[in-house]
Image (spheres, rainbow, N blue to C red):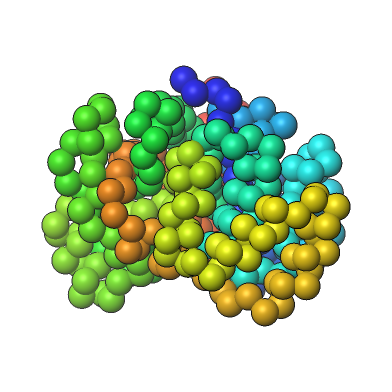
Length: 295
């Protein structure tokens, strides 16, 4: 198992779709009835692959007030504050720039901070397979999960032939948040949900961003060339003028040569993007805790 990977946790979102449930607290910081936050759960899932020194969390500077209560304070430099939230592609480039300044040969796994996973063992087994493939081939591995319905608010992956390693297949198609009709077609065609967990070498992801979003990538190339002491001031100045970009839609959707590992539906994954999904996850989690207590 690759145990020296870096993990980039993208946690700068505001979670507005769930603000009525979370009382305005972004869902990654909101404490579930268990007393834990989704961000804490995310860190725990990736802990076997990335020691704390290699775990980087990208947040908005307005999130400082949530971090202590969420229990996610890390050593200096491992929480990276964006001056403003400019979307996941911008957050990804900030994280990649930070890591490449320290470790030019880094392997990274990038993940949202606010997803639910019931089957941690299955999750880690798949992640280990993907990271081994990245270490051996230098490819980019997206992680999908078998769907339970034709949901149009998820990204979808169409898988193809084997990529030459157990469980790894080529990506034949990639559709971000399709129409209802297209989602039904993708479901019928054997498409899988895109979890937005991605593994690759850091420089491979940076180079992909350079090809897909050259103007944005140039901003971070300039930041990388600055001494660390000057970099923060530079980013403070340029961030307000940056456009919002989504890593899935603006970077991955038109990329070529991507590969995927597909987790089984039994792993129990959800992006918790609606109140209904959040309530269902709370019920499932409470039932599991009750069963554990009874045992």
